[in-house]
Length: 588
Image 1 (cartoon, rainbow, N blue to C red):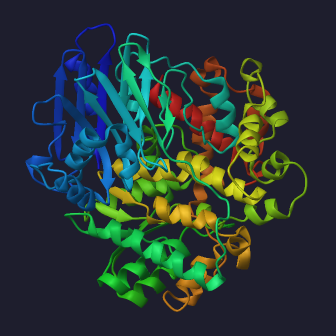
Image 2: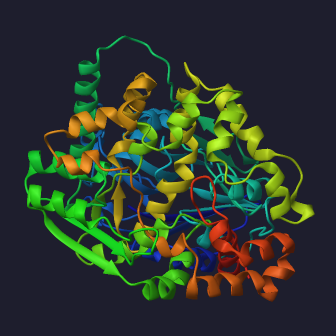
Image 3: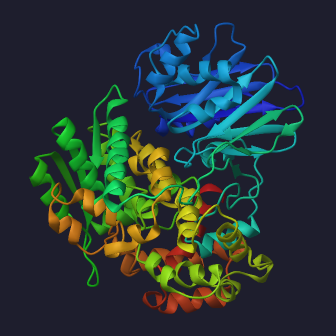
């Protein structure tokens, strides 16, 4: 788990070591254990290391083959690397390290671009092949690891975060009009390849791409998720097969590490189930929980549930309670660590929790992905029961703003076309699925989750050099779950199969509780000092000169912020303030 970056000059110039060093300084928090730079002719590769597997210098990066004709930088973890290593050794391949980085390097030498199809895990990497003078870049199937890039025509830059790219001074920082609508309609999800900035793009999940002296090739998909029924199974067969696949995913993410692995325990079904599956097979588990101050409408913690799990399994537990004034004080830090503007209130929660957890451990498992894969959110059954076109059924329960309201939110210069409805409609109607709700879940798992909870957890944990592993997004488990009839997922309020697996293992109170969300009420109900901060941000000269927002709309929301929430109960005024705060932090 690390931070990677690079520069490829396309006009035969030598890359700037100073630029690479500057990029690496923006990646230091992702990899505090080691740094490496490789520059040769018109290619430069940079790496910051968080040592998890093979802690020795043999796994130092950038890594090269024997004659240095192939070089690479890699961020992530390959859970099947021991098996791949044996396959390669059977072909006569020799290794000098015991880690997963060299396995990717050798796999590329043997199988070329098809090496990505053999990898199980989370990854983003770049391989410079001097033999053909091409750069090969790839990203894991579910987009757990980030890969940002900027193409200027004269050069290609890439990095694990946007901050590193911005440090080059070569990026077009103007606002992407289409991305802006996604930002305010899909609660800050801007699907790949776009970002909020015109000059920065991201490699889509499950894709690879070649870059040579002629520029960028097309991003090619090496994996596609199908949600069509290929065989009939009984309910009990589904439960047994999902349980087996989930246990395998959990075990992989525990065993492939040369350091201890803990669990971020929220008190919900998903993280509690992870604790139970780990405890029954591997003994005592390290667990960590965080809570915040209550608001009149909402509690700020779920300790009663997490404590019940701790008691059931006698975990080695740490729990942290954070005051509202600390949330406000630390908010600017969290925003500085966001590669893209993130409005979800738990981004700050994960940032503050990760700070504490990283003092004790380097790797944790987390429950992200279960709600999307197994239909746990409240809007899925509503969409399922609704009538009308696919886009109408989806938008009426999910969009933060319909296009008519979006047109009132931003200045006229940013209102061009209903890009978001077009994108979602195309995704829902062209997918490889049997039913509408299958299409929704497929779209969520392959697109929406990537640039919301997955990106959020990676960014906020890696800000403290903490690796987060997400077993519910094991691609083999996801492939199996997508074959399951949606009725089995929606049954019993959602996540029916997970509840059946959990019954008798974790406390019933955790299984039967109402669906909860990572509670951080201060960023949902914007009042007091938080409202002062939001008002100052949106009324600042910088914000008004930037001219993104309609002034009348801003004033309307600031007059009564508690009255304007999205369909998913996010604060609309906070969404606006967060974008502006992010731009002020990273651009000007």
